[in-house]
Length: 398
Image (tube, rainbow, N blue to C red):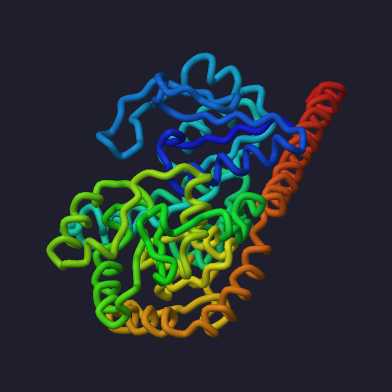
């Protein structure tokens, strides 16, 4: 099978979507399929994997995204030979999929990875909430109706898409992680590498440092918890537009010695940092189905998160982590309770590992493959039926 993955952004930019595309590409290739990633910009970047098809584009500041209205001629030719096209961003990549794939009768799959309504609120705080919601209600149903299948990574997102008016077929296929790389390996990673003591209790956040992640709330909660637990530490893994602001906030709040910012980290390094920690924490309510939480659980970290779509689909309160209200006091109190109770952490750690097994990339990519094959077979049958009708029409002169 020749599979096209269409994404507005790809490596070297690191994001949940980038990791999702890369993981599925590798897993599908392991099963003998040819997978091509169609993206924009980054012509100077040396790709370490085959079949990354880049088209010229204009970078949009330091967002990792690029502006483009067409694929290169070579990209169009390769895409036209694919058996299925899987779109991971609805705007640039989505519109180009409709333009280039429909004319070649290539089935189009769309996975919605992003809460665009919440992103608009984070980046355009003065914009009335009704405006992005109205735009999505106008755009998403129309776009999804032109796709052959819509994939939601979680039940909550399927419900949200339905609320936005999407009435196209929707299947739930969760995001997967590589359990061979993300597993308990604490003996191989030492806290001293970050200047931490072995008796320190460590929380970790992994993800973009950007406005929609509500990271100031995390730091405020940590400051309160750290005042109660002197040896509590926080590792913040990632980069983004809020990096300097967050470091400055730590300085003003006198917790710089307890918070360690790693900056950008490779996929292997993330596993190492997670293995230094005792629990995963995220304040974000803008997630769809966060890989970072699952990766943390895969190494045995119970997770602390705020009850919201996406996060609430993974964290089960008092089973594999703790779900909090979107409230600073509750977030802080849950953090303190978990970090002071070794037996609770141990029990939730076992639950976390068990949960992560449900998200093995080999299992989830197999689900995608089955949906691809079903669409390809359906398209083939439809084509044969149309040709048969045309032939019959010619015979009888209709």
